[in-house]
Length: 299
Image (cartoon, rainbow, N blue to C red; front, side, top):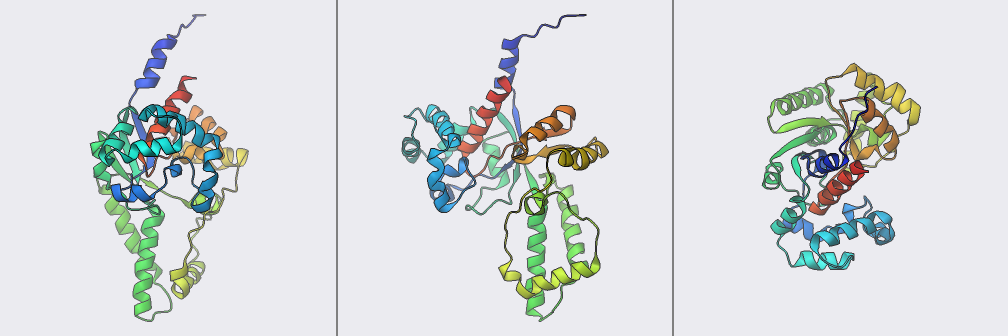
């Protein structure tokens, strides 16, 4: 039996310097939008009053220590904000991106609730390659909205599903051929879990579209929860899907939280499965994600 000797120092050098591809992130905010978006959103999806509790979390405390080293200031959120206030936005995002070693960004530009976003190609100033991830539901939502507006103006009671389907297919075909688009993304699991009925029921679709016409302006966008977990999630849903499409790359977003262990398991046994984090809005979120990811790999 041959004894394999690993050069740990060489391995650590690779981990700390190897170029990164961010398989899933979101566009940076524009300069003006960044001024009114709290830095705390880098460490939480909380909004409004809920952000007041963020300074007490271990996630933010760890991030503040790391950002304080980057900005060479005392490790408090206020000190970091004071340093940033003296810098131009260009200097801020270059300061954050330079140490990360991020080579390419794949950007889902469907997350725009926090303000105006920089265009995909604007990120090429920071990395070598930037491509778009098309959020399927955003395209479908816009298509439905346009059809609903048109139907309302014409006093129609029901939307034409064929018109919706045809428009959607044409848009997806166009995006699929675009060199600026790298992937498609679905947020279905955010809303209803992965137990999705894919059978088309014309009657049910007609009723649903009629409801959109009736009250389309009040459509809400509330997050649901992933209902299928552990063995059911991995063995009966994801594993068969991954094995059926061995040449497709599967990126488990947000580190598959709260099922991070299952994500680690899948990525360890399938070469086409990846686990990814979620840089967004502020360049600091990309910096923290990159250095924490490298640190985790070095353990």
